[in-house]
Image 1 (tube, helix red, strand yellow):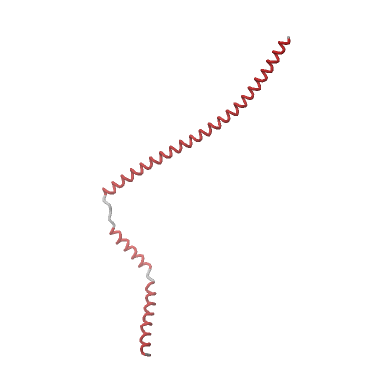
Image 2 (cartoon, rainbow, N blue to C red):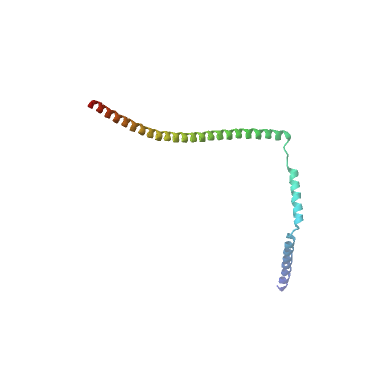
Length: 133
């Protein structure tokens, strides 16, 4: 049994040595990693399927038409909102003007009523004076 223990310890030592070598190998040269990356990029670039000129032209026209339609829609919504805001502003100014006219009208009406009352009083006074004569 003693012989078995000695033989089993040698593979364990070798396994530990392999692990330490693996750790040392895991530290790669960064320039090799960068070169490997660009090689992979080049390989993937070769796999790309490029569209032909006819497809590109057709897709370009479709995009331009959609952009034009969306632009018209945005312009229409903007115009409607601008008109709505102007309408609200004009309505607010009309209400303010009406209120001012009402206040002025009430003041004018009050002044006219006072004048009419004074005129009636004077007329009554004159009528009474003439009747007394």
